[in-house]
Image (cartoon, rainbow, N blue to C red; front, side, top):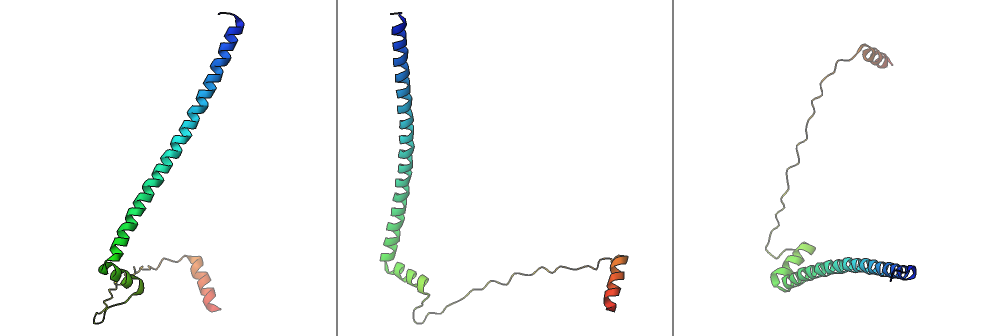
Amino acid sequence: MLSPLTLVSLLALFLFLGFSTTKMYLKRRVAAEKNMAAERQVAEIKKKNAELAKEIERLQSDFGREAEIRKKFNVQKPGEKVIIIVDKAPKKNKINLEKKEIGFFSRFFGAIKNIF
C-alpha cells in the first residue's frame, strides 16, 4: 500500500478527478449564467407581450381608435375647435453693462483709432 508506484497512481488519479471536477464546475457556472440571461429575456418578452396586448385592447375600442387617429393625423370632428396653448417667451436676462474704467493705454489707442 505504501509503495511508490501505488502512491504515484493515487496521486495521478486524484489530480485527474480534481481537474475533471473543476472543469465541470466551470461549465456549470457558465450554464447558470446563460440560464439567468435567458430568464431575463423571457421576462422582458413577457412584459413587452403584456404591453402589446394592452395596446391592442385599447386600439380595439372606439375611443382608442379615435385617439390614435387624432394623434397621428391631427384631425378633428365637425364642430370641434382647436385650442393652442402657447407658453410665454422666456424673459431674457438683461445684463447691465457697467462702464469699466479704461486704462491710459486703452484710451490712448482708442484716441488714435478715432483719428483714423
